[in-house]
Length: 174
Image (tube, rainbow, N blue to C red; front, side, top):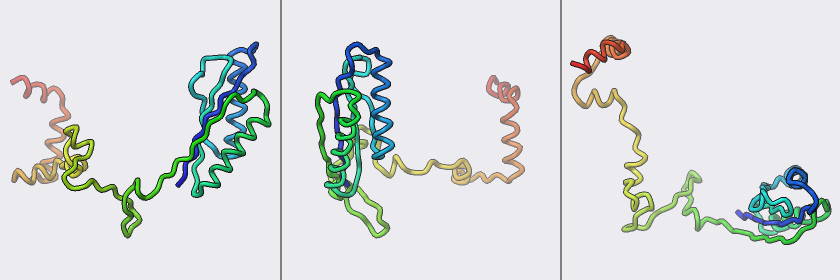
C-alpha cells in the first residue's frame, strides 16, 4: 500500500477578506475531492488572510498510480488559477507487510512482540494483552463461583427490591 501526502501553499489576493480566502479554499477542495477522491484539508495559516496551505492524501496499491494522481491534482490546482501556487511538497510513504507482521491462514495480520520485550501498554503498567482484553466477568458467573445460585424468581425479586430507592436508602442508613 502506498500513501502519497502533499502540501500546497497558495497566495490569496491581498485585498480580499478572510471570507474570500475561505471561498477560494472551498472551491479548490470541493473540486479536487469530486474529481480525484482525495482527502484535502486546510492546515497551518487558517486565520491568515493572504496565505492558504492545503494538505492532501491519496492511497493506492501502486506507487506510480498515487504519484500520477497527485501530479494531476497539482495540475488541477494550477489550472484553476484561483490563487497562485507558492510552493508544493509531496512524499510517498510505503506501508508493507513488515509493518503489520505476518498474515495467518484467515488473512488476519498479527504484530508479534519479541520474547522478553514488553509492549508500550505493558511498560506503562496497563497489564498484558490477555489482562486488558479479557471479557468482563458477568454477574451470573460471579454468583455461580460463590456457590449461590439464584432462581429466576429470586433474581427478579432482588432486582425489583434494588429499584425501590427508599428501601435501599433505609438499608444503607442502618
